[in-house]
Image 1 (spheres, rainbow, N blue to C red):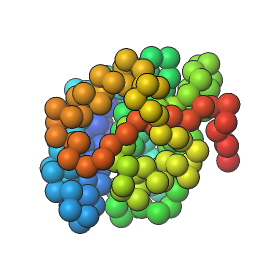
Image 2 (cartoon, helix red, strand yellow):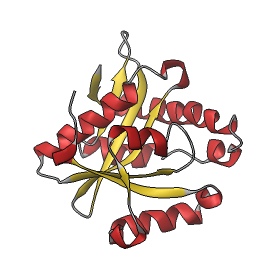
Image 3 (cartoon, helix red, strand yellow):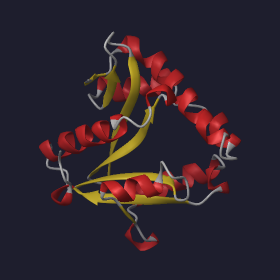
Image 4 (cartoon, rainbow, N blue to C red):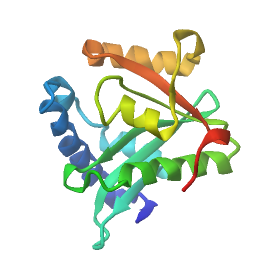
Length: 173
């Protein structure tokens, strides 16, 4: 079930991110696996702004999360992670759809994100959800700034891109 993240959840979100990152090590992307998750302080900013959600198991323990920013008038998926023990259950999609509803309810036109192009559970997955790759000319100033930060962190060792889906085109379940 999806619920708002609480202050008590924030350390667990970091643990989910570390666990989810380990899957990247298995496909030769160990640097991504070692990439430091957002700090508790950063996660708290999303949580206090009402833009952090968790998928909780039957014991109300978070097993996945999504944090959302607003970038240049679009809802931007800053991070979505599912613990590998709970993968392949459509939890990530449910969280993204929750974010899409949140954005639509606030009259935001689109969801954006940045992702690895060649990783099956990244770019190809988001294409299946209805996102499309943005050309360099289509990237907003905020997205260009995010990409610059990612390059500084060394994430461009593998192809990355910005993606966008118009909420008018989103297929809600």
